[in-house]
Image 1 (cartoon, one colour):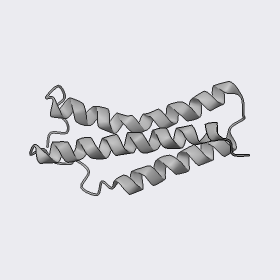
Image 2 (cartoon, helix red, strand yellow; image 1 turned 90 degrees about the horizontal axis):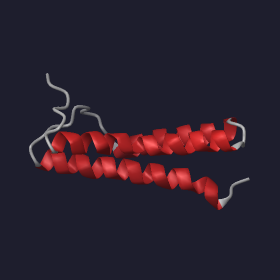
Image 3 (cartoon, helix red, strand yellow; image 1 turned 45 degrees about the horizontal axis):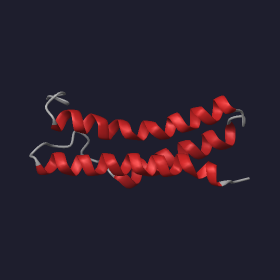
Length: 96
């Protein structure tokens, strides 16, 4: 049964993918290039939502497993974090 708290990971994943997309666009505007030429935020969001759905339905409903689903949702922010490090010059990104 779906309850409002079950929607939280989906909202978090959406925010993470959106942050990744915005920081990617910022980096592109600064002259950087995308390492993954086929990057598509809709595809990324679909992958995260599918993973969340499978994890939500397949894992037991105990607290530790709900935490695992939340952590999976927060992983969507890693792209934005990486982009920020590249934009700030802390991380060089992929160098050919």
